[in-house]
Image (cartoon, rainbow, N blue to C red; front, top):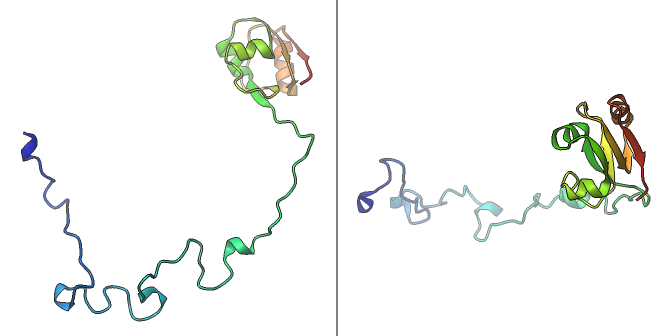
Length: 147
């Protein structure tokens, strides 16, 4: 019955009440050692405090790097994904998006991980050499589009 449930024997412990006198077993310094910053009331220190030394995060350089303004981030599409999820045929980036093979709005780059046995005619934004070689070996073609 639910009203008879109780924790397993020995699995729960009474809370230790420190600083309640020597007879309670946690008196005098109450487990804080003797003197010093740690022994005082309100001893909590902020994250990253290093005892007065200049903290690590403040020693770091303040200015970030730079980002390349013409850098293009592609969405990767592997050959193994094409082989597993598509039938042979002609596909462009828009049709890959409608079939949820490609999910972002970034340009698509075909990568050579996996192998292909079906004939694919693909229009993508980029492709690795190994991917192009594999598609052409299977009798397909790759054409490149902008954007």
